Amino acid sequence: AQSVTQLGSHVSVSEGALVLLRCNYSSSVPPYLFWYVQYPNQGLQLLLKYTTGATLVKGINGFEAEFKKSETSFHLTKPSAHMSDAAEYFCAVSGDNAGNMLTFGGGTRLMVKP
Amino acid sequence: EPEVTQTPSHQVTQMGQEVILRCVPISNHLYFYWYRQILGQKVEFLVSFYNNEISEKSEIFDDQFSVERPDGSNFTLKIRSTKLEDSAMYFCASTSGLGRPDTQYFGPGTRLTVL
Image (cartoon, rainbow over all chains, first blue to last red; front, side, top):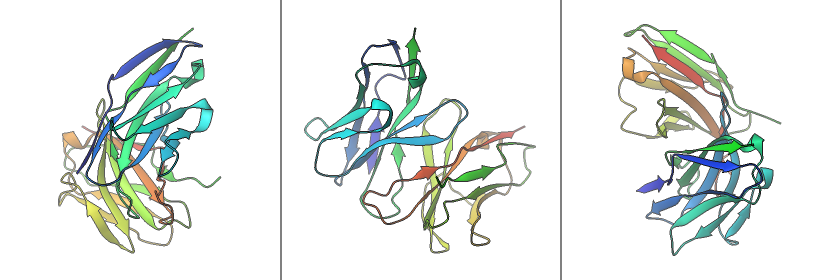
């Protein structure tokens, strides 16, 4: 069984400040981990994903995430927030078989203040 | 860039009515999925579909739900007799089946409102 917990349903940062969105997972198999972003009235867009190998993963729009097995975490960061980053962010986990479902966390709404 | 499309974007229906939500997955993809997101809650897996049959389904996907790939391009979700609690955003997704992991590409969703 797999599960994902995202700490903080709402995070507010100032423009230019560090963004840190937290994700912890539970998985009985080696996990594949994902971050998706959802802009208002839009679908889910993949930001980045962790497979195997390098634990620091870089994604689109300047985001990156680090896989820490010992902490079962996959936190999302961005050094400098931009107003356009305001959106809802979802962490998700899947198994490694083709066609595996995604299990999502509850989401974190990021607000960026000018 | 290829994308998953969904129609309609909004659907309003009366309780007890049947609805069909439509999706056009990316053309060379092999696996298809439906997820739903009740307002204010997390995205939940409903069902996955491969080789013209259901490969996995959640507890939510009961006898009121069915999926079909009626032709080479469409993938549909039918709810036979809608309930108030079926009100949600429904997302379709597809994958190629080739990646490890397999990236799921999502459509923009259909907002279903049951009155």
